[in-house]
Length: 269
Image 1 (cartoon, one colour):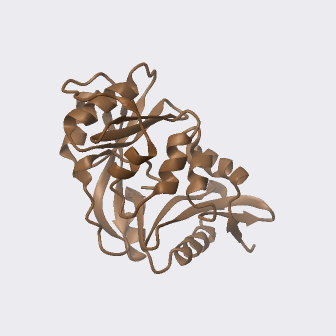
Image 2 (cartoon, one colour):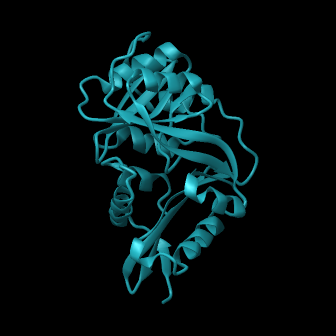
């Protein structure tokens, strides 16, 4: 049957998030609206006879970059060509841009055949969090300006940060001029992201403030080049549970990964 592909409406986003949960990705409780606000045309759904069977995101970032995520075909419809049809539609939407994704191990060879080259690994850590020593800095609620000043994305992401900081249940804190972090409730526990800091003391102060009083597991996705971030996760009692390779179709951007102690989301970078 012919696959009908169209952008997901806001109400459709709950389908994508539920599928992500079924894949074990543990999405945040407010991810649907926050993600959709970034690029309302950037989340694609594939339909058969009016029923959704597959999805992918192809989010435009500025005029030069893009990000692929949410690549899911429902198990009963795999192996029928629907995934590659969605993939082609997503890549067409991002044509002419430097496109990034966070690829799971099993799919990295397929992404390489589509022109993606690995840049670094992002390592997910999870567990019950313990307070960290070495915390330094005064904590206050984060402002949009804090997030914009500390973001290490290759292009400005004002729409993303505006939606992310204001999403229901998200708690955003800052060490003025030195760091900013967000924690959000997920299907299982809480997820920290982003966690950005110019120095380790600020990163540790933010981690303690974000996790203080939180029950259940905490998840933090750390870029492997940030050795201080990996040490922070281990010292807090988090264990490595998953890895994904950041891959690009074009030149690997020169990003300040030493300031990135935790990614905002593997779905958006």
